[in-house]
Length: 112
Image 1 (cartoon, rainbow, N blue to C red):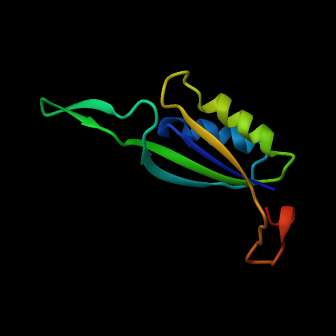
Image 2: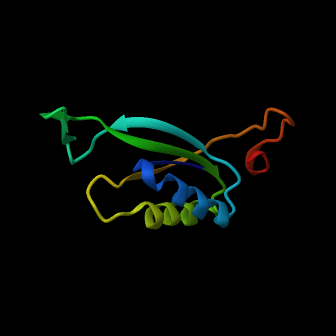
C-alpha cells in the first residue's frame, strides 16, 4: 500500500477531486495549509500599501491507495493540478505499513 500526499494550488482542488473520482479513488483527506517553495512567497497590495507574504495558501490531499493504483493517482494529480507555473506543488509517495477500517476491523487493501 502507498500513502500519497499532494500539495496543490487551492483553485485546482475540484478538478483534481473529479479526476481522482473518475479513476476510482474511494476517499481522500483534504486540508487547507500554508507554505512556500522556490517562489518564496508573493508581493500583494492591501489598502495601497505593498507587503510581502512568505506563506502561500495551498491544499494538502492525502490518499491511501493500493500499490497497483498509486502510479495512476500520482500521474492524474500531476496532469490535473499543473498550471505550468511556479508553485504548482508537489506529490509525495510513502510506503504504508498498515491500514485498519475502524468500523469492521478489516486490514490491508480491504480497509481502503
